[in-house]
Length: 622
Image 1 (cartoon, rainbow, N blue to C red):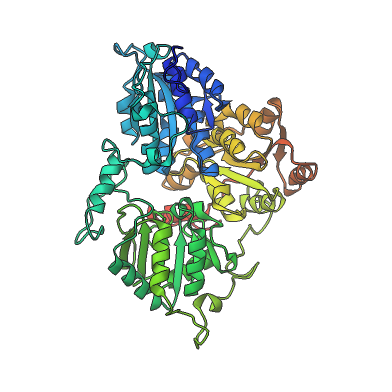
Image 2 (cartoon, rainbow, N blue to C red):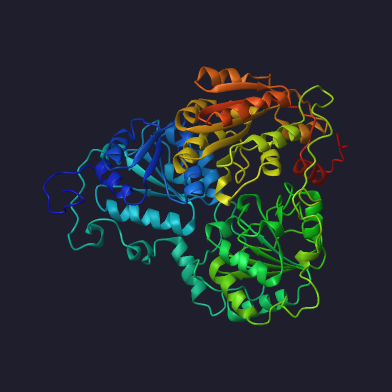
């Protein structure tokens, strides 16, 4: 049989049937071929799914993760069994923590039992908060469709296991009357039908049976480290009395502020956010992954948290009512509890039953569990004609009274160092970041690895929209996925310039996929913050008095490595050396240029100083 004609006598293998089922949901795959997935990859390309080869299995998942973050479309990652799958685990844990839906299709142990080189993929997946679906010769379409429904509803990756001995086996013909035997692409109904084996569906049903989905007294038990709490549909609206209470608080606010997070971007709530900010006369701010979401940038305070501009963060503390939409309010966003001032009322819009953030000062926290778009519209309707800032108002909106929001103003400017070089004779990374920000092509997508340097791109490089700045690694607090993300960004935005920000430690971890990055990106700038150290550790444990020897890295010539792989490598030892970037951009920005920036490790990022402080360290400023 064939999937396009269930009555055909032509046999179809499990690999072919799986590829055709996957092709209905995803257009791009990232993989590394091995025994367990060779047949699948061959069939994916035949089914019309584009395939990008990477050099380490971690990059299959990291690239698919980046692709989805930039494009909004689900992607496929594929590896072999055993060691191939275990090599994906760090990237898979990052995708799970970052709530990136994707399909990770891997070889699995034979149906007759594991071999010495097989692992329990179901248990390993569960350990990082990911669900595994095992494929078999029957019900291929149903299994793939269920996995996709789960991934999209829970916003998490799923693993699909292909038993090694069944990959080339002929699938069992399905009953023509069954739902899985339907022809062509699935309808929207088939992707949203109730699946009682899906924990996300059960969680939503448990919430929907109550007239008020909010906890009546104490909040529900906190979710585990890896698995989220109950998630409601994006179409859910909180109970009317909660909407009314939120509207009343906003109407009475003298200094209203709206903070948008990545969840607001995923919900497509930019229009509603902008309209409500205008209606309230509110200032706005974002988390790092929602930069550029508000239509009126002139009233935006920028990033909240450790990446924030210090004077702007002082203004955030003055807000009396803060509406937070789709933001986790983690310890970094919260500046370890100091983001909000005493007595602030925090109204929280989220699809999850999130707990109140940890704060130094007492605040009032009210959860509005529902979809961002629908909840914002309900709040706007509740405000009705009682405009906070009507034409007859005798006092100006708070945002019109705050000074320093103009370009170059006190709330916009960033200190880029007092001189080009630090006391050790190496470049001040802040000055380097500021100059690179002036020279980068305007049409760009930035992807950042993890490490101490992560602040420089966020502080000094402008971002036009949330999907144009991704950080793969920060959710799971890992480094070494930077080069791995480039093929995903390049595939999702092929006409844009990819800009990668990475460190020397993370760059060495991911070095195998520097070749992939150079091969797949039409236009790319790689910035390596080369300070010869794991600086996050130096600035914390080194300051505690631990031996810094294990925290240091011999200076590596990344420019030379990149040149050997076909890129233009530039060692940057002065700001004048960055003229190479200006010339590259002016000449068409084609190919890859790697800037090997020899920067001083003596400069501590603002967010790292907050980490030092909460760990009891009082380190003098450089």
